[in-house]
Structure formats: C-alpha cells, structure tokens
Length: 197
Image (cartoon, rainbow, N blue to C red; front, side, top):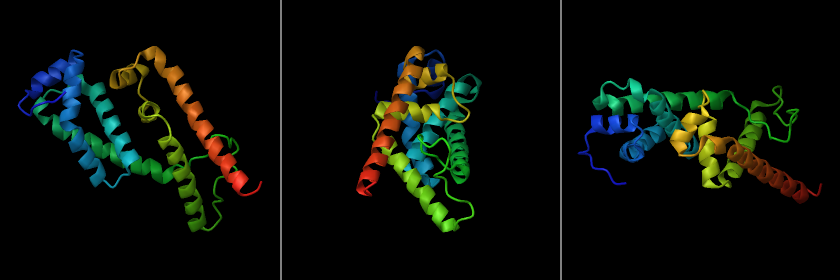
C-alpha cells in the first residue's frame, strides 16, 4: 500500500490502535527505510539491522497505547532503534554460539588459547550459522528473528507483527528450527567428507 506523507499521523496511529492492518502497513511503509538507514549507520550487518528494526516495530506494538504525541513518533522510533542496535552489539560481544548438535560445548574456543585463534574460530562458526540461516525460507527467517528478540515477545505480539495465527507460531517455529539443524548437519557432513573423515 502506497502512502503519502500527507496522511495524518495521529489518525494513522489511532487506526493502528484500533487494529487496522492497512494503517499498520502504511505506518511501517512510511518509516522502515528511515529505520534501515539509522541501523546501517550504527554499523550493523544486514541481519542485525533487520533484527533491530523488527524489534523496534515490536516495541511500538507493545507501546502503541502510550504514544501521546504522535508527531514525535519518528523520534521515538529512532531512539528505540538506536537502543536496540546497542543491545545487539553488546550481545554479540558476549555471545559465543555453539553448534546445535554439540550439547557439551566441546567446540568452543579454548579461553587459554591465542585470542586471535579463538576469535577466528568464533567468527567461522558465526559465519556458518548465518549461512545456514540464510538458506532458510524467508518466512522462517522472519519468524525466528522476531522470536529471538530480547525480551522475548509473546505469541500474541508475534501474531500481530507477522500476521500469523497464534496457534501456528509454535509448530512453525519447530519446523524452522528443524530445517536449520538439518542445514547445519549437512554442512558438517560435507566438511567431514571433504576432510576424508
């Protein structure tokens, strides 16, 4: 749905509060490109920028009833997005993903090892995870991105943001995670056969 900048923002927000899906689409169409430019200015990867933007829209859904000055919405969105970007950078600095089929964490870099080696191993593992994530269907990527928001959104919020039935979120999540595990398992098997193991 194309929107004109002339559309009255207070009216648009009131319609969003009332559950008008066209108003939600118009609102997100109006500001998503701006949010993308802010997220990219924060130095985030495309995937992290998408996470930050989706979480920002989720925060608006959570707080839409508290917006008292609609004309200040764009500032609220920008501030919320910058906070989300900072949170993502903080989490990335302290999170070390472990492959899903490695419950013991034995593949984790040895903290006593050379920090450069540990960083290279972590970067390689992260890159493998994101390549596998990129191989998922776009709908799975979107759902998993929304579900990993911190704090985790309720299924009702996910339903509103993604326009999915609440009852289909859990089963769809499970199928998406199984696909991700299968992709990662295939990568591991290919690497093992290349190495002659």
